Amino acid sequence: MTAAHRTQVVSPPAAAAVAGPAGAGENSVAGTWARFLEALHAEWTKLRTVQSTLWLLLTTVVLTIATGAISSSIIQCPGSCSDDPAQASLSGVLVSQAAIAVLAVLLITGEYSSGMIRISLTAVPRRTTMLVAKATVLAAVVLATAAVAVLGSVLASEPLLAGNGFTAKHGFLPFTLGHGPILRAAGGSVLYLALIALLSLGIAAAVRDSGAAVTVVLGLLYVVPILGKVVLSRQWGIRFARYAPANAGLNIQVTRDLRSLPIGPWEGLGVLGLWAAAALLIGWVLLRWRDA
Image 1 (cartoon, rainbow, N blue to C red):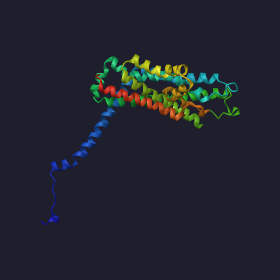
Image 2: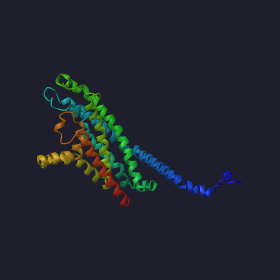
Image 3: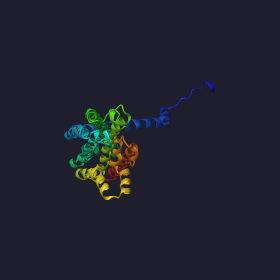
Image 4: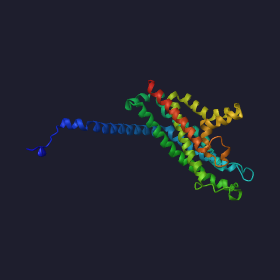
């Protein structure tokens, strides 16, 4: 037999050794993805089976629409033509964010108070996977709920604003989602509520107590902005409005006189995103280092 006709025979162990690293990598990725999907399913099951979830989501929708409709029915042009109709229509977001914050806090602190966190960590030993799964499920649910709430608010406010003089006669474009600034304000408000949820989840993961976490989040969203206006000087007040999470984030709703804003609409939403990322990072670090 010549060398050209020789057939090289590779033994099964040798073949496995050659293919091993690639196969092991594929199996590892597939296994990680499968475990993450299981964690997602578990978190979704826990969230939808808690009775308070439905009530808090319904509260979010009702408060957003009702507050926006009331605000839109109050302002009139002429008389208050300097008002921003988009901010009036979406003013309910400022109120309903409290319900979203409570929902996010209870998603993790409820397990600590009931002792379920030990069962969760037994089922999903990797705490990073558990936190990412919670954040993913929470963000998806809040985005869907916020979209319904914001759309309802815009639709409810449109005839009220038109009836109160916010029409082309007074220099206003139609208040519809077909108008770019209105679409940005509405879509940004949906993202705003999702970021508030993630900010609250991160704080709750760090604090682990429902009452303390809710106090910290609501204080950050409502009390701190008031103190910033009352206590700080004008110069520091502008800086504060530029970097405080709620102040900066809600600039996404502004559609008039943008040059007077301390920070642009999308930049302000980005600041809130950084707050949410920082809170989740701190919560993740403490979740990994502390015992359940």
